Image 1 (tube, rainbow, N blue to C red):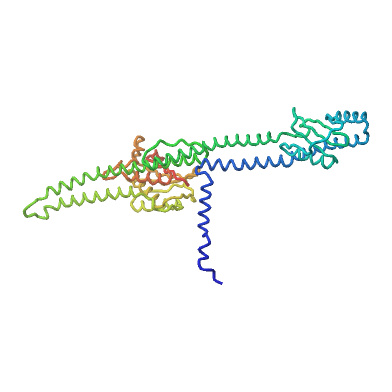
Image 2 (image 1 turned 180 degrees about the horizontal axis):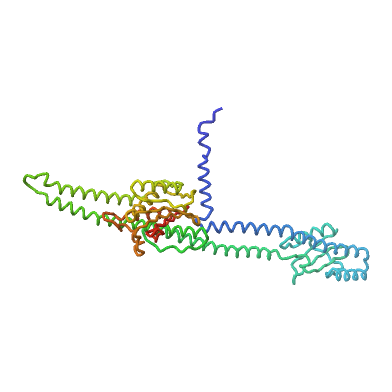
Length: 463
């Protein structure tokens, strides 16, 4: 049987229910992280205190109160039985004095008196209910329990034939402990713990707010000082990661700015030569093409030089961000680079200290480009090179050694800057590109003295 037309529209869609639930949650829950953290800490604390109060008030306090009231009612019942058996005034007084002394009660007889009402004036706690119930079950006459007596006393009046038996006792005989004291202790301890938790959570949230503020300012282009890591371990890690990201972005922007400044500087010379060559061309008359051939050849050379420089700039600015990281076997990568360099006439070997199963995770083409740049630089200053690697504390260290003249210690950092070229016609971007790629992999590249007498390039990468 088909459903009525429009019945499906009458049922809320699952997404509609989800939106309604999310809207209700947003209205109930605090919007701030601090408020939600405090709520997460306060609700379990409140539930725990409520359960503790129920366990104490509902079990321990009730059991003890029931036993204490039962003992007192038993004493009063025995006294009434003895008074009924020995009704003479002398016996009655002796019974009241003896039972009062033994039970630590004050018992008196009010001859000819009568109760105007019965029952009890209630107090907080179960003691009055248990006492009235036990009196009703064990004493066959009307009773009145008055809890509102001075000096923490209570009075029990029992209407018997001929008078009233009055029993005066301290309330502590039945009252285990004031219930309000336990409630105040539970509420006070919960409040103190909540305040301590609020202070601790506030410090944690302050670190998150500081991190968010620094990220917002950095996104607006306002450079800020590095964040001091503080708070929980996860927040400290986030602050350290933000500082590293900030340094990498600043270094990236600085390098790109330097490249853009170098474009105008390096291209100005060939452009000036082109302008001069064009200015020297004859403006009128018959021109022999052979006379212009040297100038045209120079202009073509200038254009080729400009193309080479622009390609190097674009390679540096483009980076290798689109490549997907993969697992790379270091030995295979070294074999490929060594084979390529041997075809170009280089004497290159692979060190035997490298573990055969050594792998790294990274962008394969980018890392090969780094090693090729480093080996090319070494081949320009040496006639023998060696590639080696090792594993150390969760990192992989790659070495490129040569037997050349090495690099002065004062220049070991400056050679990685853009436009720091050590050969004629170079753009000085090879090692700058290499360092940029290694930093993008979370690694480090440095120059130092090598065991072959020349320079050593040390590349540290995460495994």
